[in-house]
Image 1 (tube, rainbow, N blue to C red):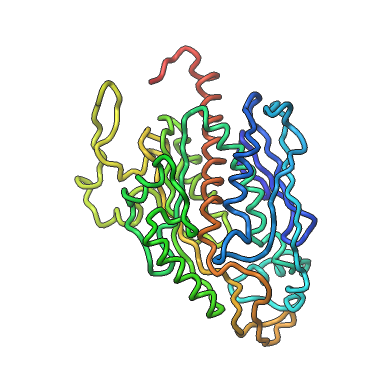
Image 2: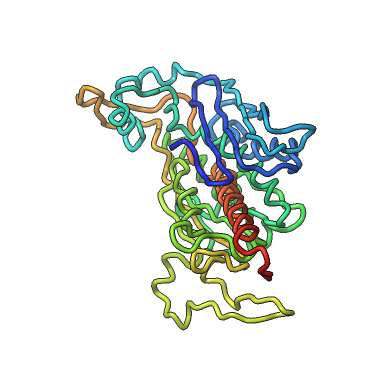
Length: 371
């Protein structure tokens, strides 16, 4: 299962310490302007070595487009994206050849693939693979531009330091003209500074910390999503939970909604200037698995990075007790670099849902007008 999507279909390939990683994007309609500078900017937001609070592995993450684009427009053919690895230091992982790191994918990969495991940087289990998703997600965003869809994710919590959910103040800043991302990706600078200091403290201790990412999507038309097995929130949840280290997903009111009564939770429908909308948005922009035109918002939880620079008890491939500690370059917290990954995953789902919706409107309801 190295692919995702039905009509907007993305496959990724490559390992953390191989020659490089890449993606094959199939289904992007012809005629989409491929903004190379926009793709570069998206990759810069995810790349390692960008600040003092992320891994110091140095990768430029420049995307080479091998096919499917002519004179900077998509042709409708599959688009092959290639990102070379430039700064892999495989020797940092030699001590893990026969050892399992606690809470990492070492043990499960070893068992699933009968002992054939790329231990250098974790191979496919490394978050390095997500660079390919960000590149593919950038193409999805370029397609979604024609609908006016805006996808913005931000850091809403690091460890015990967090914002409210939802947080109107943060979202107002996020969508404001001239918004500049904080090093932590938290829109409220004061909280961002506090988070930054906390991550640096955790890093100095040789430890790691987790956090929360909130994502807000504006201008999704009514009708995207399938009613039963392809519910929009289910597809979003699947895409987000498929990101490395993600352990939880909630949209709309989420788990807090269980403490509310139906009379409090129901989003009352109203009409303003001929447009149907809701007075509240506890549904998070999705009802019955289908977008209702309101802002889609959700939150994702990411665990602390499994590789820490402290000795821990574990076992080796011979089931013998060992002591293992991480070496080399690792993120003390995935959250700042995971923000663009969450946006990319969201964009890929919405691109797929948009194409499904358009195909249904064209083939099943050719004479039926929709608002």
